[in-house]
Amino acid sequence: MDKEARMKLTDREMLLRIEAILRERSYAIGVTQTCTERTLQRMLKAHLWGEVSEWEKNEVQFPRMLSEILGVGLSREQYVALSETMDLTPERINELFDRADAVWQEDKERMFSRRQH
Image 1: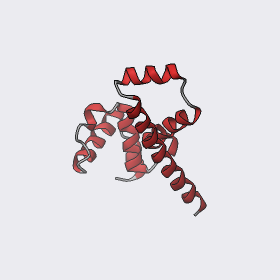
Image 2: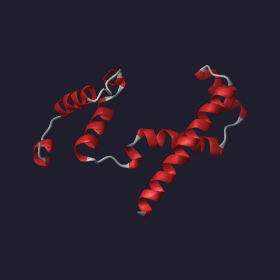
Image 3: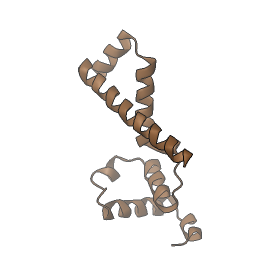
Image 4: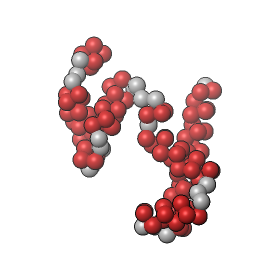
């Protein structure tokens, strides 16, 4: 499919196409039931055109946000509230923050090394 034909796809056609791509690549396990239409459209754009910026990548921005929250810090009250709303112990909350920070540090290193090449 050439670029002009891809640009003429309707939103629904895009969604159907990404669904087929996901199934074909075995990524569809529960994805199509939980992703929003916008997320599916972003995934299709990435697949067809490679047009997804670092800003649009949830797998980059979510760890980044959690890492920055860790850096800024939470008050004791916020920490307790987070623990209660997530039904997790403070140790598990710390583990999530640490995991997110590790992912973000790896992503930063990858992005900056790619820019230097």
